[in-house]
Image (spheres, rainbow, N blue to C red):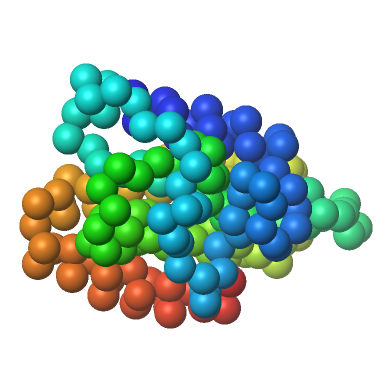
Length: 179
């Protein structure tokens, strides 16, 4: 169910997300120096039966926007947003907030990977926009799998959470050229 929800959130927001790198009423663009706060989570948590053991959900959206065409080669902008109304939190502890921030940071890793791969296509003068969208779709699927792996490894495991914090920081650093 989580996969479907994220997929449809992405589809919906790909077509509606603002292309500005700013905070809007419902979206926060990923920024290196901004950390999520409790009051950023504006969504309404589902009932206990629907949410199970979850104490928070982060809805992050990676969106793609065509910015221009140069010699019939498409140029895209890739954005990573935190969706306030799609995100909720009921356990206001620092550990939970750190966990949810890492979900947003993982989305930024994949936004950077998308930027990197799209740039490669441009450098090879690829004109077929379908190939750009195929890369985008492939990496969104990988993002979803990576988010699920993160959750499955760290739930109730503080040591694994520390490992993931280091892992994500290293990946963001390695992809710094694509922020």
